[in-house]
Length: 77
Image (cartoon, rainbow, N blue to C red; front, side):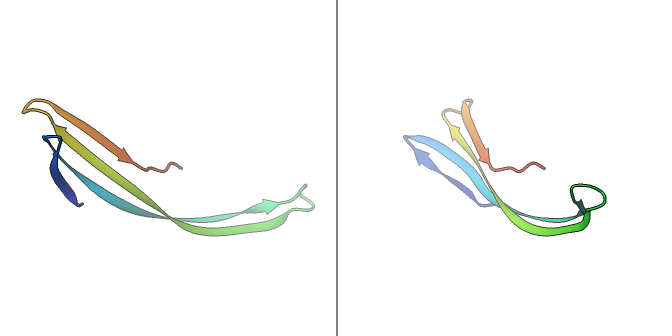
């Protein structure tokens, strides 16, 4: 995970950034129809990728005072 650091406004900061790639594969099977007499078999296969960035930053205001911030993209199933 790449890290970075520097100063802004006289205050030191550091942090890291990352990217996670997630592949999802689905294989669904069932029947589709208005009634059991008209139902036909159904099969759906899909595959897709999600790219999930994240970043953490810490600002150091003094030896005992920090401000931390984090942001990330997540998925839920």
